[in-house]
Image 1 (spheres, rainbow, N blue to C red):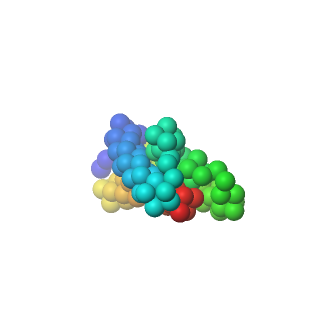
Image 2: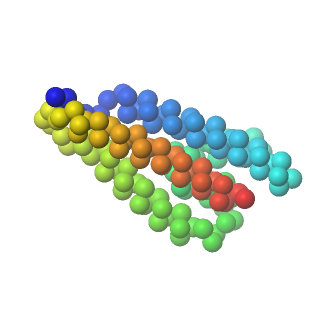
Length: 130
C-alpha cells in the first residue's frame, strides 16, 4: 500500500514535458521561418517556447492575429485545465494508503494529462502559425 501525495516528481515530470514541448515549439518556429519566408525573431520564438506552459493558449502568443481560433482555444484550455486538475486531485485529497493499482492509475493519469496539456500547446501553435 502506498500513499498519494504531491512530490518533487510531479514537478520533475511537469518540467521535463515542458522542456520537450518548448524544444518542439522552437523547432516549429524555425520551420515556419523557412516555409513562410518570414522571420520570427529570437525573442518572439523564446516567448512562444515559454508559452507552452499555458497549454492551448500558446497559439495566440505565436500569432495573435488568428482571431478565428480564439473561442476554440479558450474552450480547449478550460476542458484540459479541468482534466489536469482532476488528475491532480487524488494527490491532494487522499490521506490514506491506496492499492498498487490505484497508485499506478493516479500516476498514469497525471503523466498522460500533463503530456496532453503540452501536446495541445504544440497543436495550438501549429494551428496558429500554419
